[in-house]
Image 1: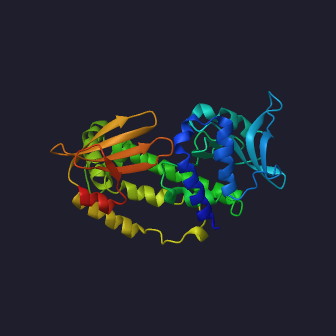
Image 2: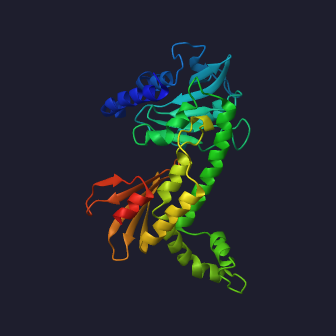
Image 3: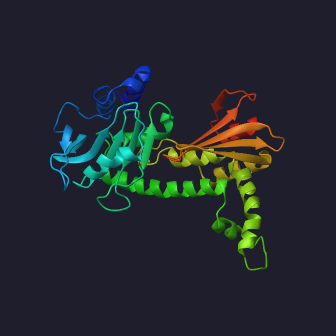
Length: 335
């Protein structure tokens, strides 16, 4: 059985358990969800020399501290795993134990999970200090497996190579910063961005760029960006998130070229009308409601704060039912 087949079997089993998940206790979560997940990755979860439960991670102030699981190779931990009950949301306060344990050994991968959501951490910012933000995260029930499956495969027993994972994680971190900056500028263009465009030779202001000028052109910058990126933002997310830590050998499709992306942007810019966007702030995400100039709502962009993933949706006949749009072209067709 291939890795993809094993994963699909596990996912179907998880979906059948969905009604029971909110009431699942922590120990049941471990045995019903977490252990089978790592078994799907190829590890012998009943062999303590390979998948060690209650792994001891002594900290400076307290001895005998234990983490839920550790994946072991050549006698050393290569992944530390902290499991919470299935109904618990994974937030900053759940990272505390994992953060303390991470600094007690040379392991560079730490995983926080509730059996449904998985967050993968490393020490990209400071050696031997776990980062505040995961370099990879996904929800098995909510997210499209096509986006994260190749990344998950890199943690399987047959594929795992910590140097490759860390190298790709560094790239992922850079890419996330770029995405986050673009998304923030899409909502409210920064002074630096407005100044950049004002300084372009095509603009030729002929004057020193002042704070007043930046403020004057901020709205024009925002509208121009929304017009171009509004319909193609999903495509940019796909280019980045499709396979953030896979190796070249895992690729089966030809990656999109800058030319093809440029063509898509041009089509979108020609097709998208002037719009207004209403921002809706939530603790876990930002939702952008997109309206035409005659106040007809035609779309929603949902940006998750945890991993900066994006969902583009189209309103169906102004009713409450919605469906995902798969591409920029599809979005254009429905405007």
